[in-house]
Length: 299
Image 1 (tube, rainbow, N blue to C red):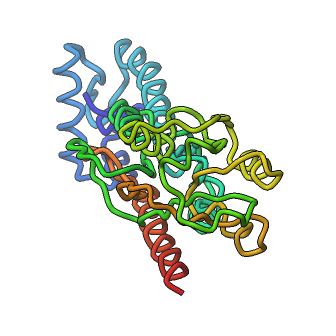
Image 2: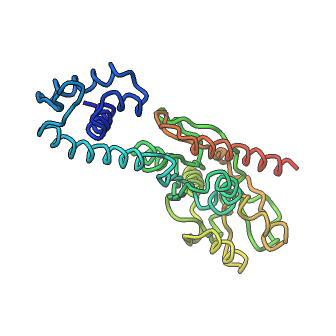
Image 3: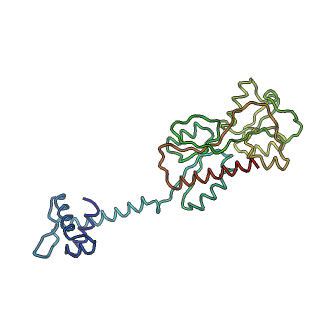
């Protein structure tokens, strides 16, 4: 049986007229008769007695009337619960702190103007491997990956921008390009273990047999900047997070001869992900916004 047959049955049970039922539901009378007959055959009972031109509910028909009403109500509740117009859509986004603080606010402002009903949840994603694991497990809908490029066969991935990583200090005394060997005499203020660009720097220094004089680890980029400005050491960060301090003279960019592979920010999602309209819109807004960031860098 289907909901259409139950609705036909309930209308006929109320009107006790196949002719009137056909008029109310905009069906041919033959269709009403056929639906009732199919329902009776499926249930193995007689639902209506045909007494001349009149029809009368049987006892079985009266019992079905009670259940059919409940089934139609449940069907309506189910459709309402599953309707994307009624539900609150949740978009789970993974990104590093640097992206969340310095790039995503303007993107989210545009996105929420277009999709005010969407709830957004951010999760920290420090490397390609973490992003890949969370996307494949369905714990993220989309990720902004800031890392050296790695193959990710199960993911669709689009390049957003190449990040410029810089050594910065509060001191202007270092005039020559900073070498890996010079870092062995410096105190380095770094992001948490596992951060992609910290990993990248540490791997390169290990290859050159270099270890900084001291390493201090922070959970917050803002804390790192404040401590560097206080003269506690030097740091290695994406340039976007220190642009204001460099412009104001609170921090100084240190030229470097340390040979590091490029770091990129890509947007990625699972190749089999169902692309809800709001997810497609987020990708479009993000790509346009990062294009604008690139234009600002060129200017």
